[in-house]
Image 1 (cartoon, rainbow, N blue to C red):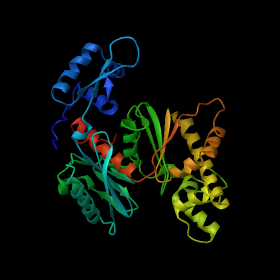
Image 2: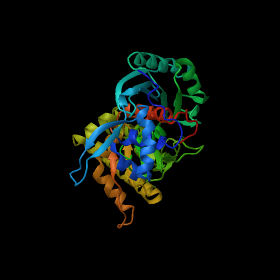
Image 3: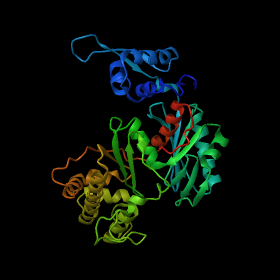
Image 4: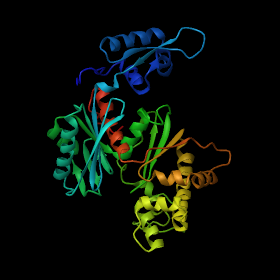
Length: 383
């Protein structure tokens, strides 16, 4: 499959191409409105994109109003393939996506040895296997830690990594342009380009699971600095009388919401090991201890969401991660707690729940590669 079809590069036409990619099929009038362009300017910018096959005229659309139907523009999303990878403590999850981040195939390989060379071997194996059927135009890697310039894993405690040049290693082994980023930032990029928040200027992402994550996106830019990826949101105070987290903070987000805390409380209540998914199943079946544990977690999450709303004023909140089932199950107490910790006149933004599977992390990582490919660079900045 050709990797030359899409090549708008930098310049005035690039925003038009990206707008069609993110929102197509879309009318010229809607593109002009969103980008603040005149009809003549848009026509001038569209012409070379149409000539080179980057965008396509895909027919007419009538909205039922008087006047001529709109001519719609779109891209051929199937023209390119990307590999997104999520590196976890015990496995690497890979997903092949098209140009819009839709998942076409997946592969998971277990990690036995966490040394960079051993993890690289797993990444290359996934690339080679999936690449046989789907030629890969770029690779994005999401990891639960802090990164530098989308090239280096500065710190990933769960792997025991410090200053690992992962993007360089993968590029040398596969020949494919590669970027590495904190997994929550990558998920934010997906939500901004193709997900729930693609029409919002300011939104927040909260992830639940083994550890908590938080991302804020303003005007298309995730807000990050050198401390991002250290798990700071897990230290947010929720209950001054609550349990201690692993770092000794009483009643913080990690103590109430992290997966290891929840399974520990459930195990203590039942006198036996209880898995994370089992806690949710027990709660849904009416088990009193599980309902109490998840109810406390949901109310604590509401406190955190209230703080996010009060401080960041998001237009939307997306809850994601393998623990999203807690938020779904406890939506009522979560929302009640959120409202109780805000002014009664305050507006509650829409709250969306992501799929909650590991593939969504890989898809987010793939969007890093899609963005760099579309822009014609390898994006060494962090946003």
